[in-house]
Length: 308
Image (tube, rainbow, N blue to C red):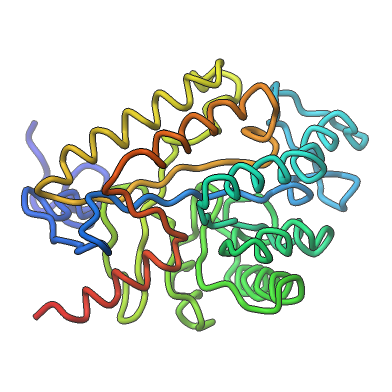
């Protein structure tokens, strides 16, 4: 195709995105104990932060066990589907972690925690990390900067009031805005964010600030309509496959893997056997470092600072 002098389709040069990353020679993360894999369990705490007319939002949420949006009135079907995670799912998940000694990161929406502090307090009392997942369960794309600053500050405040310490990690539902990382840095106190999905290793986003990739495939969200997971073993087999593959690569190039969970999804009794099977596999596989994200970020920052 002939192009006009000095112009490219789309108006943006391809060098504006990093599609190379670490390439064939990723850095050695030197995981503790010589581990081949750093494994991060992330429990998304969103119950009470979904869109709801009853909570003062302009519309109801449309995604749960089915996809349907009720308009013109509050939606008790949607609200009670989400409430299940806060009423029942959280305790099953905490018990499963406690039985295997796993420490996870509970990524919590501020509005959920403000309404129900136990959603952050119970994980914190069990030794898990509580990180920030925005105020509501929403994308920040195109959000005005002043509003986004308020979202960040309000989320921090809700978590501090519930657990007594501020979160050091941040993850936006779906898309962050073009300002999110800058605003996190300006707010201060954040060690990492997880707003990328493009690698199996961390990287530095700014001095003192680590970027920890997240994942939508090793994630119980795929139990949602059309997501591909139906039986509990669909989830466990897929995640175990990812672990085993990265453990193989980890002989020469150790990596990191995130596994995403949701109180209202994996916390259902028909799906919990999938989490139990996964935790059992992890427990009997040597060479895996299971850690909250704050510990992985702290380690990565230390190693990065030691590199010439």
